[in-house]
Length: 175
Image (cartoon, rainbow, N blue to C red; front, side, top):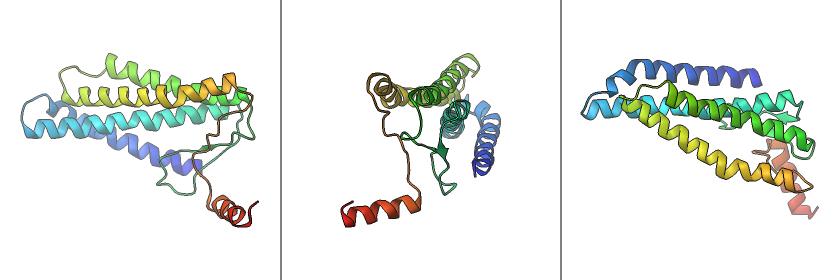
């Protein structure tokens, strides 16, 4: 299943890079088309930061031999669900750091490599910084939780259809 997500995300990144290559230089000028091309190319490139951030978490999960599971559908925005009950604190921290490293690289690339004169660059930088700030405000507290509390934070991002049915049955029966 992860191979299918890898192919999906490879297509997303490839399309984003082609849009950047074709439309980015056209965002230098003034006018409606330059603005449109800049926003489209910048959002596409910025979205790659999210995709790669998730793969960074996944690489950390694999490196620490964490228990993870893929979503049931390719339309999921999450690459995997992390099982907080079956993984250790060390595994959780390594998984977390993987995403932070990739996000840091994305910020560096956005500012070190993207041309300053393109609106597409400024849009991509803004989106990368927005995503990085989400990491600070949403994911850092989870890391602090893992460091300061005896249990890991409940970070499962989705349940499988079977787990949803089981949870619903338990809610009905009171278990």
